[in-house]
Length: 371
Image 1 (tube, rainbow, N blue to C red):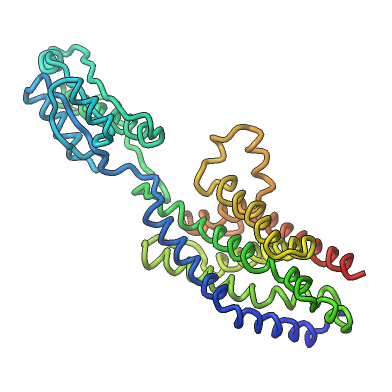
Image 2 (cartoon, one colour; image 1 turned 60 degrees about the vertical axis):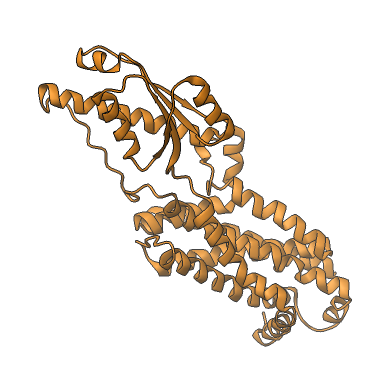
């Protein structure tokens, strides 16, 4: 049987370490704030105000209408009109512009004659993602221009597609990214705090004193994790609050379910860091390994920033062993779709399995170390 009294005593001892190491405690609270601000303001996948230059050889009402359509969109910002490829190239080379449009001299005659006309759009491919989006949006503006011409000529006939975006109508990248920041925050806390707990006992020589007491391995690991669990859940509350009140990310689902799932993932992350600390016996090495083995896969292979569907098949298979993949799927479902366990039960079950696996692993490894 696990003694709650001995477990609480270990938790009090660890809480004293946390209070004495006030710098780590400040970092544990400051890191979620910094990550939210960085990902909320700096990391955005939205295309807005791309600097654009135009060479309008037609200079007709029709060409000006096309230019006005582009300049009036939120995606492009008209920088200047140029007269020649040399000027366009100079803007693209220097980075003053990312997109250049060339309207041919016979633009108006072809448009009014119902003949096809080609408008050249040049994008700076050194930023592949922005260029890809810019060309896609430019093609969309061309379709809008053609549709307006057809309506003027023959009236609103034929099939008209009416696209609708569910769950994130404005396509704001923050609405998709910030729910996943909870996973990043918890992995950082696990890497920074619990990965050094047992290693610190070995380095300072206090582990021998703990071994000489009647404390059991399970009591030791649960007592050591308890203070960091409270810190981690506080960080989750900070991340959720800042996402809601600072960046206006809607929370359509159950807050109770959100915190319950976060608690399960946090448990697994804490015991993962504790297992590394037990095995390595070095605070520095355990912290570094925790960052490499926990934080980096969470950032890169979880679908947080990079779509899993776009990865090579080998990496797609690797993502199934990254627990943050399931947490981020649940968080986005709760935040954006307002769904619950009736849909997300499998992801939640896998997170529970992850937490149990890490708990058992930490307990077994500590037993082997103490024997």
